[in-house]
Amino acid sequence: MIRTVSTQAYPDQKPGTSGLRKKVRVFQQPHYAENFIQSVFDAIEGKTGATLVIGGDGRFLNREVIQVAIRMAAANGFGRVVVGRGGILSTPAASNMIRIREALGGLVLSASHNPGGPDEDFGIKYNIANGGPAPEKVTEAIYARTRDIAEYRTVDAPDIDLDAPGEVQVAGMAVEVVDPVADYADLMERLFDFAAIAQAVDGGFRMAFDAMSAVTGPYAHEILERRLGFPAGTVRNGTPLPDFGGHHPDPNLVHAAELYELMMGPDAPDFGAASDGDGDRNLVIGRGRFVTPSDSLAMLAANAHLAPGYASGLKGIARSMPTSAAADRVAAELGIPAYETPTGWKFFGNLLDAGMATICGEESAGTGSDHVREKDGLWAVLLWLNILAATGKSVDQIAREHWARFGRNYYARHDYEGVETERADALMAALRASLPSLPGRSFGPLTVEAADEFAYEDPTDGSVSRNQGSRVLFRGGSRVVFRLSGTGTSGATLRVYLERYEPAGGDLDRDTPDMLRDITAAAEEIAGIERHTGRTAPDVVT
Ligand code: G16
Image 1 (tube, rainbow, N blue to C red):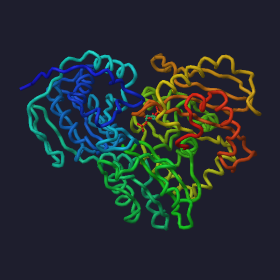
Image 2 (image 1 turned 30 degrees about the vertical axis):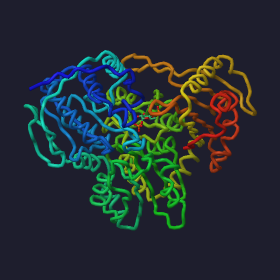
Image 3 (image 1 turned 180 degrees about the horizontal axis):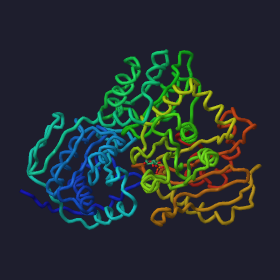
Image 4 (image 1 turned 180 degrees about the vertical axis):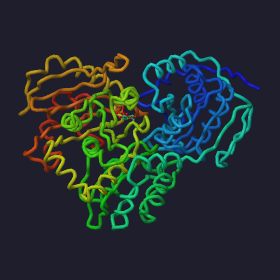
C-alpha cells in the first residue's frame, strides 16, 4: 500500500522567517512539495498514530497540496488528519485547532500577505504541538533533510472530498473534514465581551472590515455579522479567492488603500480593519486616525484588562526588535517585563509557553496573545472593539490619550523590494562593517549613541540567534534598523525601520514623515541605499 518514490533534493528549500515561500511555479516542479513535506515528517518524532492538522488560506495550489499531504501523512504513520472544510484554516485557527485537538503539529499552507495565483506565491509552514511555528532548531533540521532527501513515502488513494464534513479513511488513517470557523469563533467569544460589543452595535456603532478576498472572510462573516450583529455588508471582499481577486492581500496603507480612503472620508464608520491572506495580520484605522502596528500593540496592552480574557492583567509584553519601543513604556508602567525578540512569530512561542508574556506584537501588522501561538488578525480587531465598547471612546481619543500619557514613538518602515540579492547583501555587509565606527558620529542633528547587530538569547532555553538586523541608536531614543526580509520570493527586500520618540508634552500630533525626516536622511547616509541599490525612494512605506 505504501509507495516509496525516488526523488532528488532541491537546494533551495530553506525555510525563511515563516516557512518555505516560493513562486507557485517553483512548487509545481516534480516532487517539490513532496520533498519538503517528507523532510518535515523526517525531522519530527512521534508521528505514529498521532494527529496532524492541515489547512491553508485557500490560495492557488492549496487543495492540490492538501491532497498530497494527506496521502503522505497516511504513508508516514499518522493516525488522523484534521483538515478544514474546503482546505481552509486561517493561521490562527490552525494554531487553535492544533492545540484543542492535541495534535503533534500542523501543516499551514500559505504565503501570507504575498499575492496568489498561478504566477504568484505559495508556501508551506510546519507548526509544532503548542500550535506555533516550528522553532529554528526544527526548521534547521527540516532544511538539512531537504538537502539530502532521496525518497518520499505516499499511498495510492483517491483525493478526498474536502467540501464534505465528516470522517473518511485514507489507507487506514482517519481524515476528518471539520468546520474551520466554529472552534475559533467560540474561542473569541470566551476572550471578549461580545455582549458589550453587540450593545454598541445596537447603539449605532459601525465598522468596515476588508477581508481582502482572503481567508478571514468566513470568520469575519460569522463573528462580526452573525454573532456581534454588525449589519450585512460590514465585511467586504469576504469570499476567499485562489488569487485574492488579483490583489495583494497585505493589510497596509498601500494595499488596503480603499479602506484607508473610506476611514479618512466624511462618511467614515467608527472603526475600520483588514486582515491578510492567512488571517494573522491586522490593520486598524479609526475614523480619521490610522494606528501603526507598533502603537496598536502598545494601546492594546495598556487597555487589555478591559476584555474578560485579560481582566487579571498581563504577565509580560513581547515585541520583535524592529517594532517600536512604545510597548516597552506600557510594560514599564504596568510593572511587567518587556521582551525584545528577533523578527518572526516563532520567537514568541517559548515566552508564551513559559507564561512569561501574555501579549506579543510586531511592526509587520501582527499582534496576538497566549490564546494561540500565532499572531491573530481578528483577535486584534476584537480586542480593539472590546476596548472601544467598554470605554465608549473613539480610536482617535484612545490614541491621543495614550500618547499624552506615554509619549509617542513616531514610526515608519521603508521597503525596497526586488533588489538584486548581491547588491542587498553588499549593502548589509558594508553596513555591518561600519557599525563599530558609528558611535559618537553625527548625522545632521542626530548623534549615534550605539550601533550593533542584534542577537537574541532565548531566556527559556538559552538558544542564541545572531545577525537579526543592524540597529543604530541615536541619543534621545530615536533609531534606525536595517534588515533583509525573510519572506520575499523574488530578489531581496531591504527593510529600513525608522523611529523617533517624542516625550509626553511634546509634539504629539504631527505628520510622521516630517517627524522622521532627519532620521530618514541619516539612514541614507549611514547605509548608502542609493549607492548600493540605485533606488532613490522606497517602494512601500508602512
Ligand atoms: C511573517 C512572520 C512575522 C514577520 C513577517 C515579516 O509574517 O511571521 O513574524 O514579522 O513575516 O518578516 P520579514 O520582515 O522577514 O519579511 P507573515 O504574516 O508573512 O507570516
